[in-house]
Length: 400
Ligand SMILES: *Cc1c(COP(=O)(O)O)cnc(C)c1O
Image (cartoon, rainbow, N blue to C red; front, side):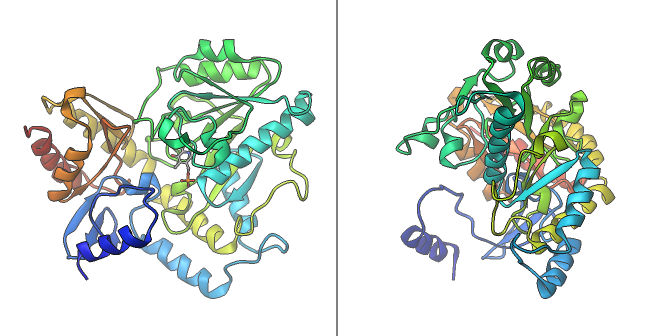
């Protein structure tokens, strides 16, 4: 079957909740992927940073197969021998007391919301059903009804109401807006240290530190959604590390399993995570031995291959080289580590045509928020591969 055959089938039988580029991939290795016609592409999205370790990393494939042969799912009705080790290794690596495993990112965000509310009622003393959580304009935290309830993107919400109450939105990057928005009922501030889907928006230096201080002073949990920004992408293990900020809770997903298998988690102190009692929360697949074994190896790969340092060094190089491209279409470039937003001018006509032109030339990228081209290759990319990509990007950004 050819590309068009697969597309026709998907058009007929698949829900049209995405508008993917018309490339049908069948194989991946490191930073490279191949389509069904045998054409090779450099993947500069890395599945929204889930594949930081690179496609089909041999160490992850090996662990996945070995664990699949041994034991895959017990449910949490029983214990398994992988979850305790992931719990210990992840907590020690990140410096937290406890963790709670889930599968998708959205589930981990939901978990953090439930945790913050329960902490508000049982520890902070907020009156029943009055808890408020503050979030930011331009946020992306997932697609459940509760999470889209506080999205500022109309397309994510349209037709899906009624929405979950208890959220308040403030401008991103504005710590004073946070100070003003907090009330005695505020239990948490949920924030992305860098907004990914929002267009790789890097907040002003000092913002996270200031927000952290405000939360501490007002007895509000500072919760960082590091699902896309964490695990090396920005050049540090967590994006919050750039400002030496330690959140009360951290949400991880995506690269936590290196693209092998959905694994997400919430990390917090004993005091905060302690609000969960038996039966208060759960997931059939959450904490399954297959996912846990893969996540343990995915974390070791990040450490062993020094992916944080790589992202820092190569990211600096990438941004510096991009800044030399004097494109008539580009407003500016922004980013941190191997995570760059090419912000196009309004007249450029949106990111899509540039993404399609790059695809023709063997580079896969995805636009976000209409006019931003996001570059986020697997962190195992080499300088030579970045140069290869830059050559093509230069061509496309200089086209009419
Ligand atoms: C991708 C993402 C999510 C949602 O994760 P899913 O696995 O798609 O549910 C939440 N927050 C951020 C910051 C993300 O980038």
